[in-house]
Image 1 (cartoon, rainbow, N blue to C red):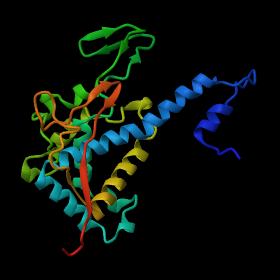
Image 2 (image 1 turned 90 degrees about the vertical axis):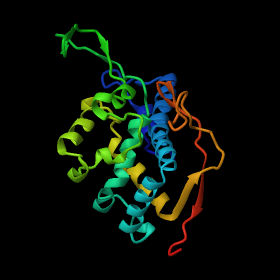
Image 3 (image 1 turned 180 degrees about the vertical axis):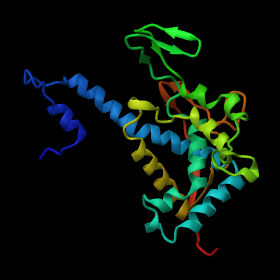
Length: 251
């Protein structure tokens, strides 16, 4: 029995005029690889970035764990919905991790359409290939200031701490982990749901720490406190190594 999967529909797609199959076997292999990378490797990078930075910061680790364990009454309560969306600190930690460790460091190329396009002071004629690199956008000192710091509070409106609506609008204006516009990631809502549920369920029932003595997955060339990734169109990474233990409620 054939399952009605996305690959099945690609394999069975036919030209409406000729009835011929649209995709060759090589096309299907390429599309399958893309789907696997887009659906798993990108969220894997988000998880790695989150745990890398949260396990290096005891105060912020305690903050996000406390939010999760006081918001939900049981593991089964952690599902998609308004309660999960109310976990502002968890979401801020995820955003900050994706800022510091984007799933794709390089730009995704776009071709200028007929008529050309004016971008600030430069005019680009039709056919020009342009792009904006997520790594560059998320490490702009004019926007984020302390670009290398893991500071989730920058994403949370709190005027008592000096974070205003204008500050939130500024940091979000250039932050597009799933791209933006009509070509943005079609699965972005599913991906964010997967990330939030997985992290909330993990930290609800498990304590986590960096594996003692491990240096896998960390240590930039100049700063050991930065997660090191390599640009291979998607972000290539090693590790990291962490240890989990079952949380003892009431302990």
